[in-house]
Length: 311
Image (tube, rainbow, N blue to C red; front, side):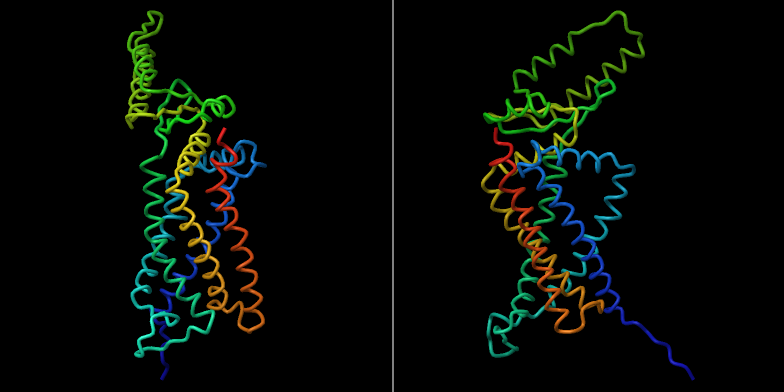
């Protein structure tokens, strides 16, 4: 008589949660490396950032790639991660006399902070995606064979000089109305009906995109034919605001700690580091990479506007 070996579902869930976490660690490294090129002076006015963003933007089937390689791993990791949060029992604080209390062990504190940063990341990632991909995502419209991208910005003294260097135009409310009048009043009797209809359609789309987010007092619209430049301006605008500087600093530091502390536990869970010596070595490696990637993330937050692209 043979007995069947059954793998517990909890074990499978833990392994899926772990492997998606590793994938997200790799994505975090790539993401903050690209973002840092908007800030560091060696980036030549953010050229490295612009080139990297354009390369990603031009990938075929990009929405499918983002959903399969990013959206699904994040959702899966978050789904099981939130379930673990409600069953976690940190033992490094909150002594009540009814449960173990062992604050003298460093790893207990690391476990507690892994849970705390989980909550920060659940809300932080949601807010980040909504802000960057929906609220402030560049509007676009086709103009002839060229696609234009529009980003709403708070006007500042540095935008004029940046426009000449990065290749974008600025429109305030009056200039938008003037441009609208030019388009409406222009006539071309040499165009065929088909070409004229196509041109008028594109002009209408351009105006709709330009006015998709009405300008408020002190705002201008930046228009460029380069998606990477539009994204760079969006990042610059975000990190120009003190509140965003504070929130993104907390967000990035939480992400880096969660990622690389999780990488250390991943190596144990998958049997890569089993001895005490190998675990100590892996901890030093993980925290060293954490420090480097945290620096890149903080460089993007504090350097994009205030150091590299203010003027």
